[in-house]
Length: 501
Image (cartoon, rainbow, N blue to C red; front, top):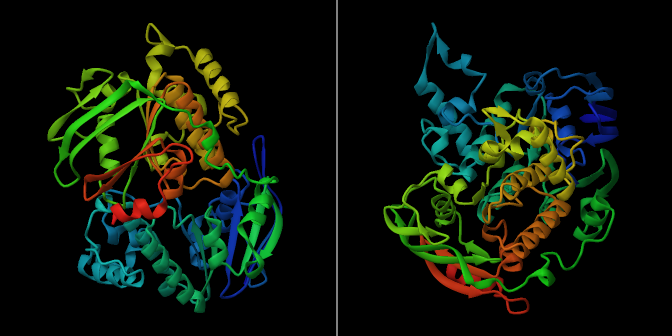
């Protein structure tokens, strides 16, 4: 029903897609995997109409088409659930669901909000999300917004006569297990009317859900694997062109931290509705991981330490000095860096270059009499591009055009180049492929070796166990259990889950 034949796409200095052949049959779930920068996102955007291909053909039911924008793709039944989410935070849920298609609720220039809310509830029922359609989207959790994204795409069922093609770009990256199971159940139920392209770095999920799996590397399809015959190790090897190290979390590089050098002390802080009576210490060279379920308070603790939220009780001490002013600017001045979960919203600035993003938190160091010393900024960026192996043709590239893994490296370079010695990592490997994750793990070990203290909210429990010197298990906003995690003496998954739930 949908086919790409020898599709090409080029950007200045980058050959993003090289003769792609890609076929989707009716009712089929097709997996798409590859390292960050392999071309997956570019291919998805060509299918969705956000990019126009430079060569080859896109065929729908055997007829060549050319989508000039996503609206045209949607009119042909192609919808996309975005990894970084396309919802507008200050609009309501129902406004987001019907964004661009509000006319059906307008009579004599007046919007019938009641009618829109009723229609929105029908879409939310499809994804089993029970929320008020009039809720402002920014008040939802990330997982809830992800389900609203899916509900928005499913409005195509009522608008399009033919079969649908729905693109799922990392839809499970921050969903809980039961939410993932719900999503997979929804996808399987929708196969009667829709085909799916499922992009994920969680290869076990891709294998579980997909009928066929396309493997991409360096802008080309290197293999197509039948889902029934696929296994994680062989796909990883095809993706990266090498065997993945069994020492995945770099435990052999884990060295004891400096217990005599506390960088951060938190004493009895509380924030109503988020966390209660939290006390902890972070030392030079230590990875302290906060483990808990979604909403346990982990993220709020990180944001308090960085200065984005002020606790109602307790105190925070940075390098021996009590924090009186809670603000991001003060946190940066004290050497605290924060890598947020939603990097495209809070971690980097799209539209600015790599070098501008790297120096964003330290511009006073690169100005003279109010004039920016751009040559020095670029020199610093070139050094860090080389040091962290950032895949960018130059420091002048728009950061928004980099792959997710390379964007994450830019965010880390921003803090390390400015001398931050306390780094807060909130899901730093979310949405990254296997190779990019290994790069992040190497960076974590290297930072510890340089005396940096790291507080981590990990993407998986395995990641938390593998990287940490110390684990604090948080449930309902309180620390329920501490674990020391020396190499060879780390807690099990069961140990953590027992105190998490």
